[in-house]
Image (tube, rainbow, N blue to C red; front, top):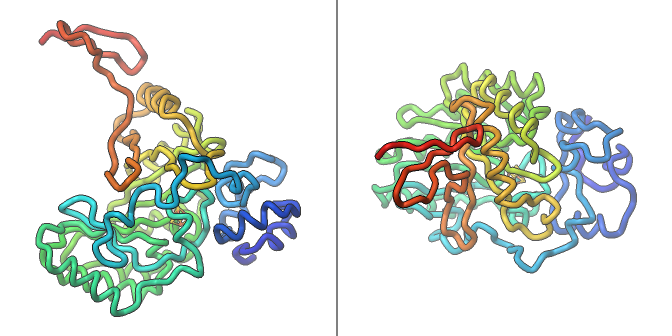
Length: 341
Ligand code: SF4
């Protein structure tokens, strides 16, 4: 089985029916569903949470007035091509725009895809020079696109170039590959991406417990066995994981796979994605429910990327009351207690 890359392929596979509005949706964003993900889709369930993430919907042609083409303001914070410098001590470096799957809710949906250019050698050299010249940059986050789609040799060269910059202490790779295309995690890749000096972390994007297939778990085990710390990133998505049981199972499955849940992202104001959006109030309610069900190890931080490039802020529920004369603490089960002081 091959990656499904066109509406025709999806039609043949029984995942969509012919509709001109789908062609419009497919023009706005490429299609890719790996065999690993396609095999997880329950074709008898019209609301299947795996299909919902990757199969184009006619709802993508509805653009709400508040939606943005660059919802987290990457462009406003990009001093050189491929670099986003939002916080003093870290940068994003985007060497390519290709992904193993195309997630319909993606916050970079207008940038990712096979037509999107990768950085040329000269542009990559300029991006590395930018990092080299700024000793305050301690962490470099490789994102894209998906950096683990690069050939191991090329990615290894990039990591070696970053490793040679003394002030870069941490190199972080953000990827969906271990989950959606786990056969790409090989000994050759591990040998290529392991830096000699800096510390490598990998952030794994995973939104539903079913995504943690045996093959995905084996790929994560290879990374963890190689000593690479793993963190989980989840996007809160209507119809995919906006219920407490699914989130609970997902966070438990991630911790069991040695992935520390890191962020639960509030969905961004991406054009054509209103059908994925959940209210902040609902997100807080879910976080409150998770607090009563899961240990601290399995709790992600619920964050909002402030539109305009202003960065992430935690937006989880508050546990302290606003009485100026007494500290009131709300426990994980909703009861309020007075705390002296
Ligand atoms: S893998 Fe990541 S960057 Fe690529 S489409 Fe999905 S969310 Fe966007």
